[in-house]
Length: 404
Image 1: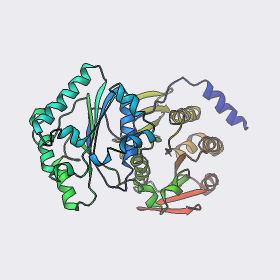
Image 2: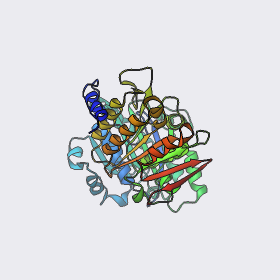
Image 3: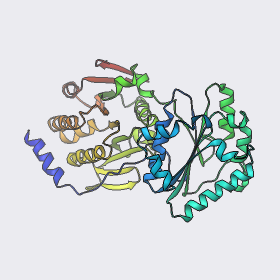
């Protein structure tokens, strides 16, 4: 092992201790409500299981309402994704019921009764000392109302929830809700009307998630299947005058759409951070010359000393330890800065060690290099570390090397 890497390891052992917690894999904050669409092409149960698991592990009481036709399979699917349904139902941490059982126990949809039951359930969760009430409501294609989604809207927009008209259910930090619609077979106009009515992406308290839109966002950019993307380590050469951050955004959003954690090493002023700053599920490690120790500045952002490569490696190691089973997406947006501050030789050695650390096929990584900032021999040397190379020029992402 080179002396330089031995020094890395010594410095890692001497770093101030801090933990990297496993964060949410859905980009939702406590107290938010989101509406989402899906079709049979989406692996919705993977997403739902992650939402439920995060709630249970975070001290929430979780309510899950599902379409009647899934009554025979939904518990099995949750078990397949690692949720002990029987255990959590017995201790009331997980409440599960079909849509008809909850909204139409006597065969009739009574809006006022449904609102009262919902408010009572939240009050009971608070009384029992749960940290939050987390609600997952899969209304399917509204077949329980014979497709008359407007009836459900009246329940959603009822003033007894405490929200102004047109906003939907008003949420505070105690309530987090994901309401999902099956839009398979609906026209684009129908889907548009539903989302507009339910405030998806319009009102401050409601956000919109499309489980299909970004599922292969980056894979499609480079014309590969998702299976071929996973596990690859890419060098992405970019022109700083381009909108290269959009390629990184697609990389991150593909991960999030597939309920996979994303970690980004960048600076607080970078285009990448600006582009993804609102994504709660992305974990940022922000390089700064003004700090000498790690500093947690928000729930998903940690400040790191810019030139402390030992801390960079330690932070990455702890992140990977927090996610031992999942596919992980990594973005390293600081190669040019490292070369400028450390020189080529140390950067090269550091990169070799980092790439060894993420050799696993469950880690898919994107390393960014501003080629205009370096002499050709520097670029050539760094290229030699990556079997898969991409180039972003203008508004186009191209594969320049790799057996994709």
